[in-house]
Length: 305
Image (tube, rainbow, N blue to C red; front, side):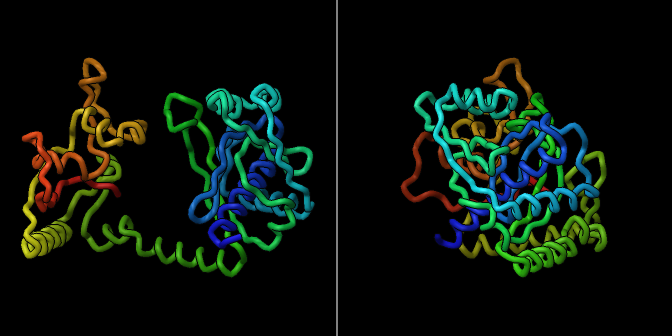
């Protein structure tokens, strides 16, 4: 098994161990949703009878280690839609996922031991003992909405760092600590470059020193663009949703975009999700795309802090 494949498999398997541990700690009424692997570990979304806090992290980690030491077998089964719905009849999120699957979709479930089962495509390990050398640590807990919809269930998302061994975990934690010390949200106010205020959460108020730096960077950018014969333009940051449907952003990010409601869906406006399509329109306004596109750059005030 290649390294990247191994990373994905054991991190995904640790997500199942995390879910099993949480259910054993918080009881069978726990609703568990999805638990994918991510760049530095995995996470799992739950609806729990109590709020998870930092003081609970150690007991979750200890329960996970206890489960791994049981050396339980992992078994995969292919089941029918009706069988899957029966197995997860008390799990509302799994039930919804099953109901949304195409009629001809292959449905597989994975057992960890005899008392935990999850709806999953896999692949996974064969036995929990293969996770005994791995190193993991609960990273954080945050709020999340089911399927990213603020009108749906609010969940608790538990993040887990996961690495092949303790050495790599320690190196990553050291990297995270150093990155936090260099965090621009921390350094900016300390250096009197910009400040934040609750009136515009996530967006900076530039202070005199910072604004001079900002303007110097813009000037340098313009000089470089001139050297390479780019022309500068400025595009609106709010556009009709028709543009975002064309670009594909509407389908992927509509739940996380800032929308200005209109009389009907065709009149909805939204702040641009990324500097792309809106900046290309000036070279398309005659309905013809140039064979050799114009070299254009934009310096629009689109901030993500």
